[in-house]
Length: 320
Image: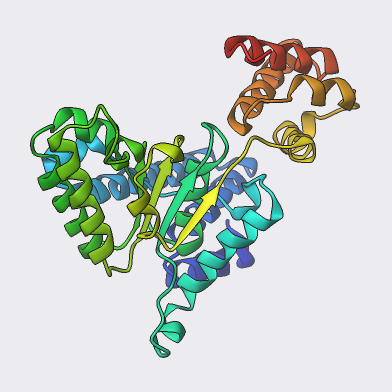
């Protein structure tokens, strides 16, 4: 049966309403029971957890009107801040957002509010969506990703009304709301290809963001900050800029992803091959290398294999 410490940890996580921690501990108990030969019990525990997670996702989705269900992706994230391989200055700013959220009542006593409206900008694959998952994890709120590009194309002519529905939900249901591809509706109003409908949408968005005083975190993510209307920037409490990983960050990221598969690597070659790649591309290359290593019945990654996978990523995007 479960150890006394496991039982106590399960009770503590339940009382603190830390569902993800509770699920993790329950799965550890299942693994323990499986090692003891209690396979039926282990299977039942896993089944209960899987069913509970599915119900949690369904309940979260039910908060959204049916017509928005295809535009909003809901998840319960568990991504600790240590997962982010970014400059320390950027990591400190993310920690500040979390700290202010946790201490918002103290700030309110002095007439101040915590940072809630955050704009993330930078090239694709540099950690913007991952940051939203980290914030969701750290403040213990569900993550709702609004796919803005689909919102515009599917509901052209009634986008403003759909935005109002979303902001009503932001006010009613505390969560982390990520507006992905934010520039799809936040483009500069003076752009030549602009149309009257999109100007109305942008004006509505500016108004909704400014008037929002909910307990939710609102995050906008864009790959093209130069396209955003300048009026948007002052609506956000903080703007975080992401860059492609430098040499030190690439080394740390590769070591973290490879984990126990990391052997003695020729770092000079690896760092040269990974230059100009994003965090996501390096992550994919490392995971592809791990798969190659496993299928070759090897225990450690070879420099040549990793270098080849990194080169493939470079060629895919024709960077050099």
